Length: 345
Image 1 (tube, rainbow, N blue to C red):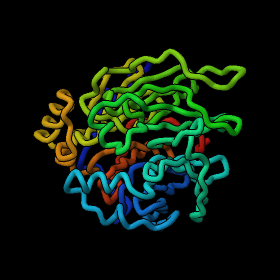
Image 2 (image 1 turned 30 degrees about the vertical axis):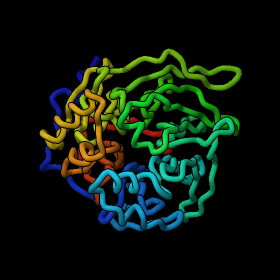
Image 3 (image 1 turned 60 degrees about the vertical axis):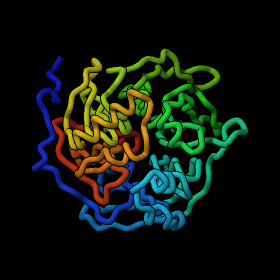
């Protein structure tokens, strides 16, 4: 087997560049083959960033509450992330529209590239859907979503390790739960053959995976197991595969970029955290006493509250880092290409 291209690799901070400006909560980023980026935006929509850096906000509807709330206290943090429209995870629909998991309105939505928006789902089995976090489309045009929790406010679930997250799938026009009992379900990704679904359990804090099984009654998930270390050393948030099979992962708040090899070994690629604040946060995590103040104190400077990782560029070797508190998108070159997403093929 060829050597893993991430062995011995570390991100050179001097080679990190930026694109975009005055962004608000660029949590999730979609990249297109022509170099166009689409970033979730807390004003209630997405920011389209052209290859030359020019940008245009496309709004569902303006909501100034997120942009005006300063994240300086627990009350302000809760206000900033629990009220009104708040696009979180993004995916391209088959026709090029943008699927939005809206963490503020608790809905799965679809928005045209002009901004027209409609609700796809806001309930599952007759109950409110909960905190929809991420959305993913597979090669069979199924739509997968994660629900982090049904606890309101969600910050209580994040602090107390509530295990009520779930995964649902839209298949044949029906949304149904296919797995549940997760620690704050966050991003999900399918491997190259779509045989395994990898699941971020943010307060786990680890990554799980489940085998994808095709059946007469529809797709199912089985054989749940933890992939990699049972404790990743921080809160995992965003993940993405590269072409070698490494699973890249952001650890939000401690602000590290790591990768899990195909064998599950953890590699540290970039550490932008505040050492003292990160150590205090990890101590609170271990004791079950995490507070908003401890979370707010832990952040880096490159992409504060590092939240997602996206491969782009013509050769899929440009890595973009999304964040919850950044105002631009840092990017750098990778020694290995990313795994093409379904809209890339």
